[in-house]
Image 1 (spheres, rainbow, N blue to C red):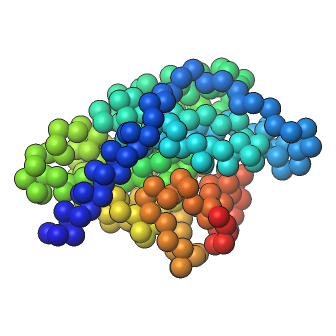
Image 2: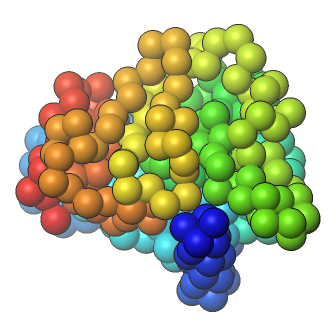
Length: 266
């Protein structure tokens, strides 16, 4: 019980910290500023590749995803951040419908036929609903999730377990509980529809996705457990968008490369 209470406190404190970090929103996307002219061949290839949309998670303000967005931009990717409506506290399908409009804005502003997604936590569920239920597979080339509770998490159930109501009235939390009607619908049938290349990234130290195996999907996805390659690497839930090793997995997925995490990356 003490451990469960501790996890709850940590998760709520984390959400509060992110919510207070800023009030940035997902505005109409604009093409990122041009980089130095002496670009390498790899940089030039990235610049010509699909634009990348970083999809935030529950209580994740846009500024919290600037570190990973900056890495992507430094590698030459046209990168955009999508902050979930209402910080992701509401209905996930509703968030997915709003996200569908943002994807179309990115495609229109860049002239790209398809975009790639790098989605953290709840953002991965919003993105998967868009792909599976809203016809998004025609607009997306690659899907990479970071610590997404694809099959739910006991941490979402913990509020009800402690007698504090059903996720304290947070709809998205209710939908991310193991066995929810939302997840039953999302995970019915093919986990990886369309020609999209699916990659999931998870970590054994994830405080908010339990069991951590629930961050993987079936049906041909590339599911990467960081510690299977880097046993000594300690990466938490929020660390997945900050950690250098996790980023090397993301970068490889965006180029359809083999899974070769750099365990010493910073």
